[in-house]
Amino acid sequence: MRRRPLQLLALFTAAAIASCGGGEEPTTDGGGPDAPAERPLSDAVDLYVGGTAPTCQFCHGEQGAGGMMGPSIDALDEHWDVDTLAAFLLDPPSGLAESERLTELAGRYSMPMPKPSGFDESDARVMARWLLEGMPR
Ligand code: HEC
Image 1 (cartoon, rainbow, N blue to C red):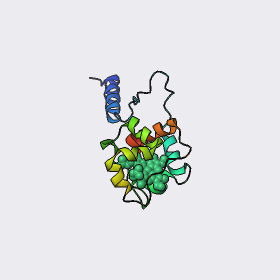
Image 2: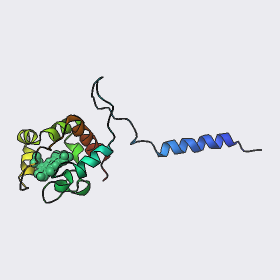
Image 3: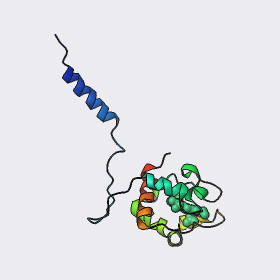
Image 4: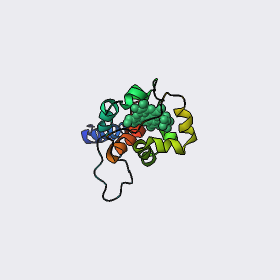
């Protein structure tokens, strides 16, 4: 009996799809009907390493591992979702004032997190998405 190439192809395709599932799902960000198209997460990388000084990386280290000036930011989903984190990034002093945990955290460093200069809401959202979903661990 002859093999049936189409059947093999179908199996192969199914396996390929299964093995790359996850991680590619579009994120729902609750931005409402007028929300602009989502920016690529690579924009956040640029802001993290190359935004206005002092950069995020200067204080939080490579890949958010933490440094002399700021805590590690690699387990954020315990405390934040995209909306709350974006709001914090736009105004860290207010977030700090409302949270005992952040106040305690800030007390370990020489200064609390400053307001990132030149950050707009779109920057804050793409950064929050990247920190929660895209940053390499
Ligand atoms: C001058 C150092 C400094 C810079 C620059 C800085 N941070 Fe922070 N960051 C801190 C400190 C200190 C804290 C601890 C809480 C506080 O001070 O508000 C913190 C807290 C945070 C948290 C909350 C951590 C948690 O456990 O919930 C996130 C997220 C964060 N920073 C992201 C960023 C991003 C993104 C940038 C760049 C736009 C940035 N930080 C720039 C020092 C810094």
